[in-house]
Length: 72
Image 1 (cartoon, one colour):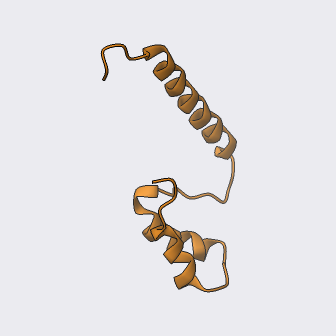
Image 2 (tube, one colour):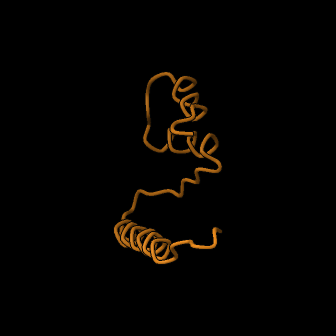
């Protein structure tokens, strides 16, 4: 990290992420239809998600969307 790094801004960002995660966990806590979806395994988890929601359409094209890079 740079010598004059603004740690206060970093701590605000970390707190924000922790708050969002806590709120999401509380929101889904009592939901009966849920699944864990890891972005690191998005292509694998997407197949499970597709089946769970009984999705229709072109699965191959939908899966290919995970290969696109946005703002990278």
